[in-house]
Length: 153
Image 1 (cartoon, rainbow, N blue to C red):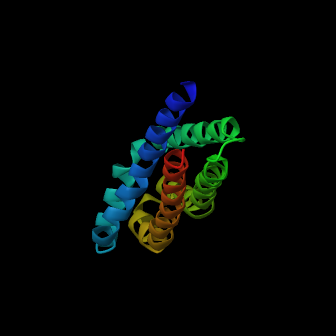
Image 2 (cartoon, rainbow, N blue to C red; image 1 turned 90 degrees about the vertical axis):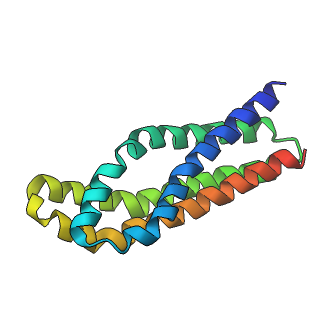
Image 3 (tube, rainbow, N blue to C red; image 1 turned 60 degrees about the vertical axis):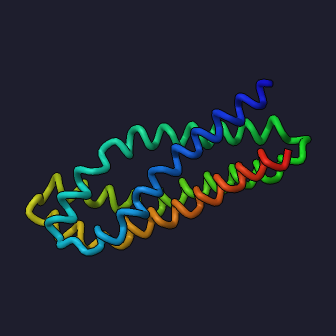
């Protein structure tokens, strides 16, 4: 019974983690049409809770899936659960490699030369937006693998 509860909690956490990437993906087409001032205004205000709440959800998701993988290590679901764990970790690696440096650079510009914020946002927009897409794809694959791991049992 405890395995069923852990699977439920894990599926909910990973699904919640997926929502943030889905939001970025759905917002991408209109945001790519914004001029520099509008893009900077939207991006600098819209995602404040993504860093705190989103980070907690994604780290909790990875921990839950890793624990689940350990618990099902002798069951048919093990490989899929392990690959789900690796996909979620890869998603986080992609975020740290592609998105986090942009966030850091934007913050530096905001603190040092606020008049250059729109230009800086526009220059780094593609890396930030498509970095989120790459992280979303990896997270989505992890979610699908996790669902499959539950379904095969």
